[in-house]
Length: 295
Image (cartoon, rainbow, N blue to C red):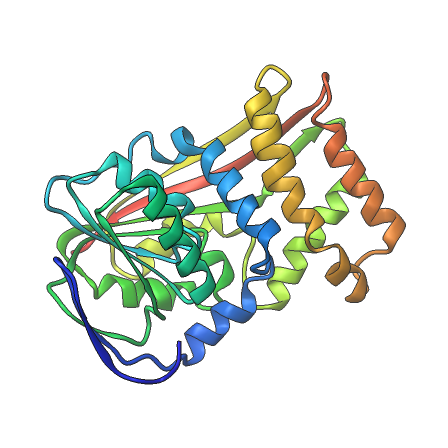
């Protein structure tokens, strides 16, 4: 977003667009190791579509609620949020103009009218409105070097008694059959690359202490286990192949360039991950969903 100032009015929000990407915006843009190419956008949609019930079976907002969704990307999670709470209004933001543009196109096609998309850095914009009833954050904290500070800032945007919902993965929770040392190594490459950019691919296990540390009350965390075998073909394709393995494949060149692994071992690891999608294969991964209340 270029530095400047305009005014936009919608049915729910009035904005003064005065954005200048400072440390947080730059950090998020640089730390997102998966990139913004078409294959990554497809992966995000595949992930969201295959995990709707797992993530959102208990996600709904009351009539008239105003929700801020942070890091909406191409709108993969936003579609489910909007459909499950048609009488709530959502402001969904992301720092990528390209992602916001694609999200708008998706919503124009599906006909949902309760979402406004805005390209913004949550940590540096003015918004003339009351605090939000709720904040929703999915797959964002893992890319930040100071997630606790991010949560503190978001807490200030929530009204007293309102909630924050955070969903994050944890690569350390990955198990599969047949086991493979090479597969474990390629997963660790992604973890290490994210760590070098200041992120944390294992942050799911830390949501409870993080939300408590910044002052949210009544924090509840529930593990969301993705268990996949050949009796679940939708998850075999949608999650094991097109979400998780596709994500790991995406760091091949950067992992080799960083000297974390050689080409042969990386390719063997990817083959081993695909091997888990065969008739006798099993794949397991755990996400964590945390909900806290503003004091």
